[in-house]
Image (tube, rainbow over all chains, first blue to last red; front, side, top):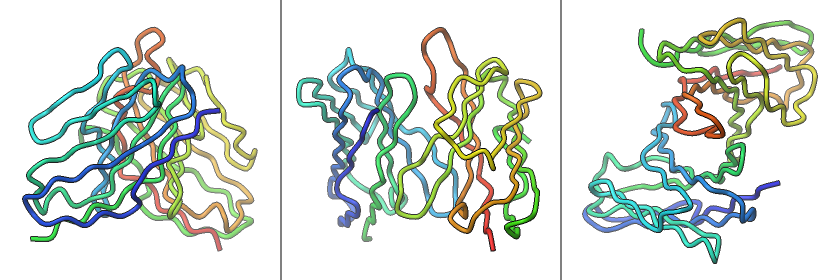
Length: 109
Length: 116
C-alpha cells in the first residue's frame, strides 16, 4: 500500500520567515495530494490540495509543489504569523488517503 | 449546528463495556469516514461509507463496528476494547463524484476515547 513520509516532525521559525514541509510518497499511481492544518484541540482542516496533473498551486501565503518523478511534494508558507502555529499533515491518494505523521510548526513572535 | 458534529466529545470506558460514537453531518455530503488519531502516529483510515455503502475497511479489528443508517449519520459501535484503542476518533464527510473518493474531507472535532 501507499506510504507517506513527512519531514520535519517539528519546525520552529521566526514570525515573518518562510516555512517548508516536505513529504514523499511511494505509490506512483497516487493522483491527489492535500494538506491539512490542525490547531491544538481542534479538528483537521483542509488548507490546500493539488492534483498530479499540476506542478504548483498557490493560495495567498500558502503554496504546494509536486514533483511526480521524484514522488515528493512540499508545503511552503511565506510571511509566517503566530496563527500559523499548528500541526500540518500531508496526504496522498490513489484510492484512499494515506496521511503523513505530521509536522508541528511553531511560529515565534 | 453546521458542519460535522461528533458526540460524545470525551468517553472513558472499561474493557468490557459497550459504547457507541455518533457523527452527524449537515453539509449534504454523500460519503462519511471514521479515522483514528493516536499520539505521534499518522491519521489512520478505519471505514468509508459512500452513498451509505461501505467501500473500504482497512482490516480494523471486529471490536469496532460501523453503522451508517443514512447519508447524514454515522456510528461507531465499540465493544471489548483494549487500552491501545485509546485515541481520538475523528469522523469526516465529503462529496464524492465518480472516482473522486476521499477528497476535501470535512472533519468533526472528534471523540477522545480512553479505555481503562
